[in-house]
Length: 506
Ligand SMILES: Cc1cc2nc3c(=O)[nH]c(=O)nc-3n(C[C@H](O)[C@H](O)[C@H](O)COP(=O)(O)OP(=O)(O)OC[C@H]3O[C@@H](n4cnc5c(N)ncnc54)[C@H](O)[C@@H]3O)c2cc1C
Image (cartoon, rainbow, N blue to C red; front, side, top):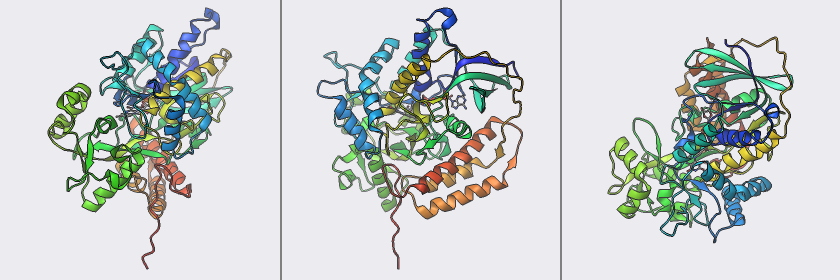
């Protein structure tokens, strides 16, 4: 174990939530005298740029077009979220959107422009206006680069390949144990304020668009600290995951449907208008359920996406990354052939409950980005609102924490060296149970059985010596149970949480 290090603020996560928080925070520190400046460390579990942020394709939503407005964007967000969103948080974030985009640009992000020099705004499902700023189909990679550009310029301190595995409250602050995956030692850190920016929960499911580090660790650690967790059941499935028989799942951005690609069934008939008058651009929950239904009717594991009517020039210019990935992964050239697609886990609308400044119900503990539940998404996230939420909430939280005092000198004598309890579980079995019970269409009896099965696995699992994989598997098991319990507690189908009505077969 290394020596205890003390920081005013520790940030877990280097995606848009963690790094934009760090950038706003450090920028403010530079305006203070040296002895008043607060210290900050950012930690990432894998390589620092291995984040869902870097994988974002479609872009970031903001009402920057003259024909658009904050109120239209707010209305679309509430509509997608089934009107259970927190209206004041939604208005606060969307009012900040145009400024947040300018901040990203000032940090080095580049958004595509048309021949007139205006933003080339994309259209995505559930949006009444074209308002998606993008960098071809690799917006996230470009934003991630800009985040680092600014962070390095501000001389931010970052530790990569370190997993936060245990957090305890100690005095007014937190003791965090980081496991260094390279040096294979523990680093104990004491901080006055702890910012969770640990991203999504995709790895709880068999099929996901998320990175391999998206286990929901931050949500698990916050839950252990007693923080309120809200709406874990609200899992968004992306309608168009590429159907890959073997190998890594891949996302086909909604922007392709925005550009004119159509969903077809196995008779090659367009089917979306049967389900919603907005057709292929209805909100994601509606499109995912329609696809699920068509798959069930045809007894096939996918439907088709037809992009062949879009001009080849447009496809080459805007979707080169997707063209390449379809060729590499399934040998299909989407410019000439249909692509097989199916709904896959994509985004967690729930997470650590926060107020409008990102503060959780535990004093000093903040949550930003996908691991947080701010109330913006309600029962279903509007496409491209998550990058926006990440940067805006980072700004609001940094303003709050900047107002705080420097950490009081700590005298910690008992640094806990005991590693967290962890279980040796068959994680593939856990993922299978959760994926079958908490998918696009749910069933009350299956969810109840799934909780029993997972509790049974937990009771019979052996405790084991510390390994990162076992820590992650334990998180997967515990969060799967929490997610199912939340789903069962919801009486009605709403947004992404859809429970089959009970049919009377007598
Ligand atoms: C393929 C794909 C495409 C998407 N496209 C879009 C889009 O076009 N527009 C949009 O708005 N949204 C999109 N999203 C969603 C959006 O990208 C994410 O919601 C957002 O980037 C999450 O940012 P974040 O900072 O919360 O988490 P992430 O960017 O995922 O970062 C999480 C960080 O936490 C770290 N971490 C995790 N656990 C630990 C731990 N125990 N200890 C230390 N560090 C830890 C990770 O190492 C990582 O650095 C997409 C998502 C995916 C997967």
